[in-house]
Length: 355
Image 1 (tube, helix red, strand yellow):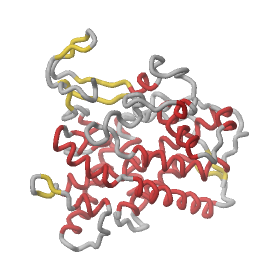
Image 2 (cartoon, rainbow, N blue to C red; image 1 turned 45 degrees about the vertical axis):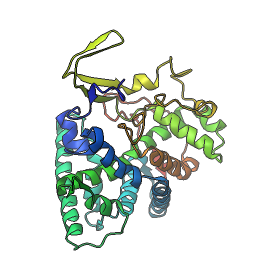
Image 3 (cartoon, rainbow, N blue to C red; image 1 turned 30 degrees about the vertical axis):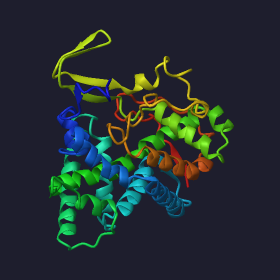
């Protein structure tokens, strides 16, 4: 119902604070119908298997670089380090020029878009300011590309979005900038899933020990179970365009409808042993179209499903390939509970990697 009902729309559904921070205004997340399909097609083409392999390679190199630079200097926070590795890879792959002096600010702004958006008033204000800075910076880059002042690789995210037209007109520079952020910001946000994956390695040692990590199918299953067991955000939202009845409930026109991701992915009617972290469930049977709602559901092209799911799995896998053999599983007792007063709900203990 949430994905296929014609009575629901995503236009204007996200609360203004999320539009002003996480998504940006006038972007693909707030579109429906043909405009959504056409603009979504840009993301589908950009975030293909070749992009996933390219970014996974860059991420592996980034972790190796941190290991060399930090060798003998003590532990590094995995969540914070993930931000740097993923942001550097995202900017380079997308063709967005960033000099080394401004890189710390650009990284921090990307993180603030998802990590501070709904974490209280002061954090939200940081996220709004980060959105303003990032869009202003990227809008200027888009203008330079269009004016021929900046060489850009054909087929890069920057070139494609700067040149994208709707109705015979280029996107306004600020909207193009927001869509560029919708390419690179989710790549950096994979840091949240990486933290969840490391949490699973500690919290479920029996899974860690029995998983044949050399087998790509088992690694994929582990990553999919991470995305099922640990939803990034608690809900998705839509607006009712008209009054309708669904399973005995009347939904009035103008109402906001929310899809409970945690409840859906832990529903005992859909999942056996739903509250147990068990990756092998993904090896037994194909997952139904609406069985796993981790980064959206339904059709990638026609619905609001993230076109970067395979890319996210590739980046989690690449990171675990580097981190897993280096993690110290004999650390003292620690608080592995998730802080559900925080969105995203990260573990209270931030895992450290000894370099």
